[in-house]
Amino acid sequence: MYYQLNRKIGYPSGTQGDPAPANWPSSYTNDGTNWLPENDPSPEGWRVPTTAEMVALWQKGATWVSRQQTGFSVDGLIIGVPASVAANANKDNLKQLGCLFLPQSGWRNETGMVDRGWLCAVRSGTSLSPTHGGMSLGDSGGYRDVWGWGDGHKNRAAMVRPVKKIQVED
Image 1 (cartoon, helix red, strand yellow):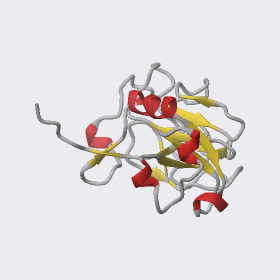
Image 2: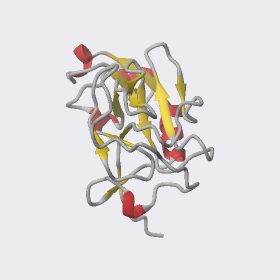
Image 3: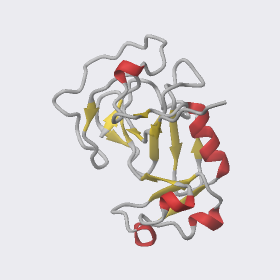
Image 4: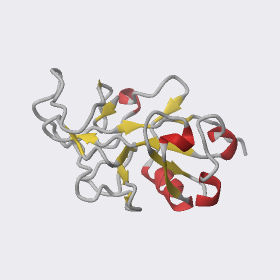
């Protein structure tokens, strides 16, 4: 599913050029907020990651991997580990390796159509800019951007990869 920033409603993913779903909103108001807890689409005990958390993963490493290597149904990016570790990643050992798989997915643009299907696009709960809405992008050419490249506006919908809520005691 794809999610707009600060909205709990999910929209189906699809392939490049798929039209807007019937429930696609005709407008979106940028209210200047980050993702509010009451709108978080994550399962119980999980939350949408912050942009700072996504930046930290991208900076540790982002390696394009094929579906043949990983066993997933699509190509994508392994993030959070160096390329040498990502080279051995598959769907059975991601947790043990400490990495995250982001499937090649694109997003739904402002009109609701699936766009940029060759990119991995993931939403975060905060933004580094009031207009970009915390979207992280990456593709097989090695391009990655955690600010949205000008295309991560809040009215666009992308996948969310929730993180587990934990309490750290002093």
